[in-house]
Amino acid sequence: MDSEPNTGEGSSSSSAAAAAAALQQQQLQQAPESATSPAAAAAPPSRYESQKRRDWNTFLQYLKNHKPPLTLARCSGAHVIEFLKYLDQFGKTKVHISGCPYFGHPNPPAPCACPLKQAWGSLDALIGRLRAAYEENGGRPESNPFGARAVRIYLREVRESQAKARGIPYEKKKRKRPVVTAASGINTGQSSGTSSGAGAGEASGNATGAATTTTV
Ligand SMILES: [Zn+2]
Image 1 (spheres, rainbow, N blue to C red):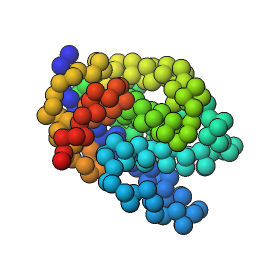
Image 2: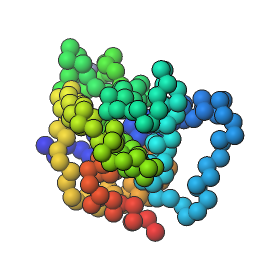
Image 3: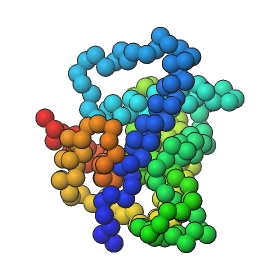
Image 4: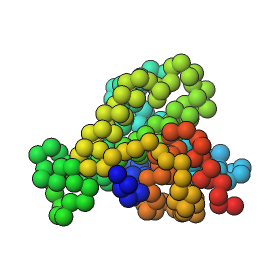
């Protein structure tokens, strides 16, 4: 029940970054003039804000590379799910298939060939950021593809299947553990060590958003 806070979500935030890097590399090749980030000049954005901006740019880049071409206006929940599945290739969380002897083992004694995926907590937090970014960039809440029912259902399925496969129950976020949030606030780098608290908390309500205020 009280499994360790390090359930692996933390590590995949850096894999989302890898996805962003991969996409940005393509972007650089296609459009070298967009190398600078104009908005970065003002006050230094919080970790959440800069992550949100990176995620948003990653998604826009994904749309740009999409075949057939896809615009934001035509983007549906199904496209968002497609995007989440695309991100799995950059995941770092082992998710055992049902035939694996370690299916349901939180700490397998040996390696196995099961695929690495994005942890549910990372996807959940990502969707929260993209959902906010969509509306901050002029999208209307009624047409927000990140808030689509299909996306919610997909995330729930991922959570349940990963909980089974990894033997890790994903419980409702507990409102405690200031130690963890403080640590993740200091740890502003790309490093992967932060706990699940950082990722999972951001999406599910902003009460935990206090994490970012601990730094200064
Ligand atoms: Zn396995």
